[in-house]
Amino acid sequence: MQRRTRCTTEFRLITLIENRNAIILMRNKGGALQPKQVEISSLNLRYEAYRLKAPGAEKSLLASILTNGIRDPLQGVDRKGDRILLDGFKRYRCARKLNIAIVPYVSLGDDEACGIIELIRISNARGLSILEQARLIDELKSVHQMSTADIARLLEKSASWVSVRTGIIKEMSEIVRAKIFGGQFPVYSFMYTLRSFMRLNSVKSDEVDDFVKSVAGKGLSVRDIDLLAHGYFKGSNDFREQIRKGNISWGLERLKETRPQASDECTHLERGFLNVLEITLKYMQKLMARCQDKRYKTGAFYAQANLLSGGILRQIEPFSKVIRTLHDQSRQA
Picture (cartoon, rainbow, N blue to C red):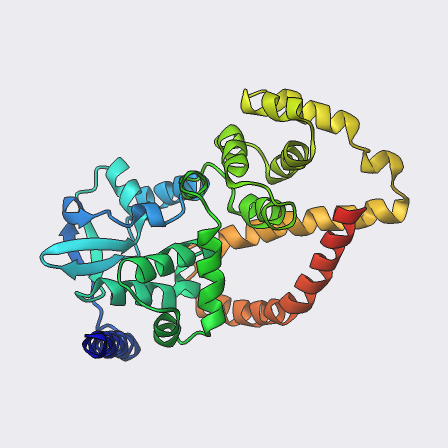
């Protein structure tokens, strides 16, 4: 029985590899994956909750589609007469709002797992975030019974690359996951604020859930959420109770009153450095948003973008090391 299961798994993996290679070959030939016009009502939205919502980006996309139509086709898999949408949910929602009944659509084949693999594989071009990658990998593991090694092989990534994403999704409760993927709580705040408390301070999962439920959907900035998190997880029970009751403005005012102001106590050199950090954070967030813009078309743009992005990539590892060291030092101060 065990041998039969192993043989079945190996056959499944071979089939997935063949399907993946067929899609890659078609893309390389150019024009083989031709879009077709389909009724929007025929699309299955099973994976909509697996993709992050971004109201700001969706608003800009709505204006673009109103003027230019849908330029990039939606993508999915055709399984047993069902078109399962994998990519293009923002375009789908915009089309619905504009009463567009027919949309361009490209099929990635008839194998759901293979379609997910292909979407993750080209995620750099499609703007798939690390959390979206993590959730889709979790789907491959839990529903399609694929191992870390199999996923890594199909994606042509290392096993550790897959394991990191598996670990991230396991850290998220259903409540936190729903708020983040619903666009009500910033990805940045979870990745770099909440996870640090979860790892270093042994904060319980239900405490994280209560905090996220209390501040999600309030239009708070990343900085305000970070400030509130420090007060919530390090402060008094009375402060936590006030935040749970929804007294967010009171909490922020209280924290800003008791927290030393950089402008008052920092040296001229320190104020200058803090200003550089603030500008860097601002433009990092802008850059991540603009990288997903689909309106970039010219060869001249891509030639220069390739040179500049290559320079950034060469600096990412040393940049990450010095920022992490600074973050750890400042947390202990």
